Length: 327
Ligand code: ATP
Image 1: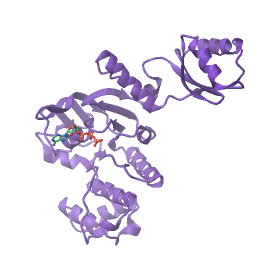
Image 2: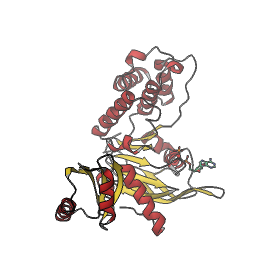
Image 3: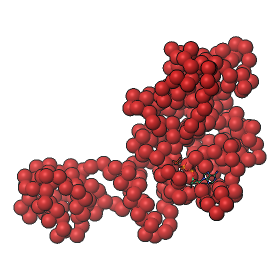
Image 4: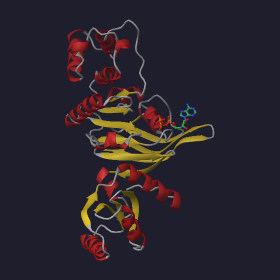
């Protein structure tokens, strides 16, 4: 399947006012978003935010209580079989079968997908090469490490060459090397034009590989945008790390007398300040005031806002206003 396939003009994923309730618990509360084709989108939220619930509906494993969800223009509830041929689903937990090797496992699923003869052999070969499973062909699946198991699970999701990949917490529990390998595979898939929808509750994990981030909190989308736009935030402030000759307490004392500066945290000889502006002139003036106040500044460096800080800031704004912010 490629961009000339069904619904070629439609977005890869289109969600409109989607609800999923379990009795009185509203796991997903009227979310709407669009994922364009060929994009890698990170779906981020705390435990219980509604990520898996959303992904299960997208993967045709559950029904929405209300609203619609489409994959490449095809409704997941009305046409689940067609949607299944377009998606590759990698759940957060996958079952292995005892006494089955990696090759037998993939062969089993390739048969279930209807591949026959040479075509089946070719599909399995391609997937095993891509996920670097060739050396593990004869290894029993229940004897794989976590990282190898995730690669097998990804391989299984890729067998029918789907247009859209839905990966639920694929990097959970992986060691740093396995994470790097997984990121690399996801980037290659994106370069091949696949759409990748990937969940995590660890922001830094998604930052490098995603084009945009979609934040869900208590069943509602609270932000959809690039990590840069998230870092810039909605507050228009910037964060600086400051080193002094004097003890760090002096920086705190100075910041306490300057209303446009907030002391965030301190070190032995300095600390981090949040300045109420992103304008270079204003920032320059603040540095001059600091020096005029007698502080010996040895380093003054703008820090990248941590995504986690930006996320918490958005949550704080929502708590204060009660209105989700979607940019
Ligand atoms: P995690 O990061 O922990 O996997 P999540 O964002 O994937 O969390 P979901 O699994 O979607 O969260 O769960 C959202 C909410 O819906 C939770 O409060 C969960 O307990 C509830 N929930 C999910 N499935 C069911 C179900 N089948 N019956 C009842 N409640 C459910």
